[in-house]
Image 1 (cartoon, each protein chain N blue to C red):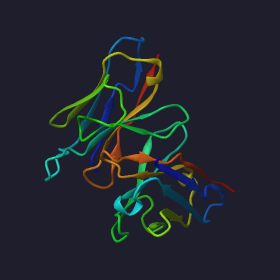
Image 2: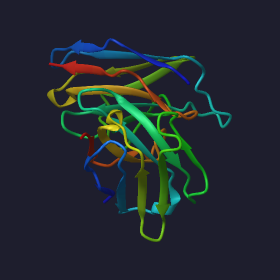
Image 3: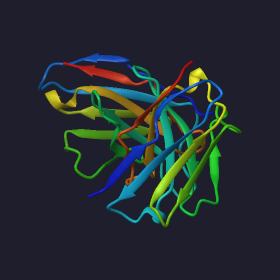
Image 4: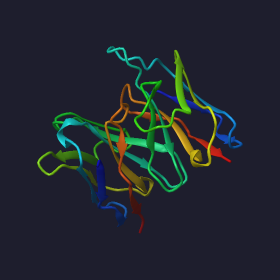
Length: 111
Length: 117
């Protein structure tokens, strides 16, 4: 199975300040079609996960542009340029290259 | 508007069975692959199963292989998860998810399954 390792697991932030979360995959997530099968999700308290970033660096429709994703090999980064109160929750990375799909442990962002 | 309405969760005894449903609306159900993902309250996300848009290809996590069956009825726009021989460790919130790992990703609200005597 592909192992996804996130850091940090807890991220206290101040509104208006930037934040960054990292995720490492145990192997390349590059599909033969050229896409990287890697997503970032946010699970707000009491809600189901919602897609933020797909294929490593593509912002999902409706996601504010303060969220951005980047990738370098097997290292992935989610950046929030200026944290807002509504960004509180647990952030998960996920690989969808092969089954079983696997998730990172989650990063709890707190204000 | 895209909607996934989940039902079928509840309390069941160890060794029992339960069938979860996920009814879709607002999009072309038969165009998408679907998944089930579970989450013990307060813990992380664990992928359970996947089915292609025709219902001909399915995949399972090792922990549920042989006990759970994913299926779909494209005429009824509904995804199912038949869970047999349930164990205490299967207790979790179960989410249905559309097209994970892509721009079409969308999750249902979840349904709680509790396996206990």
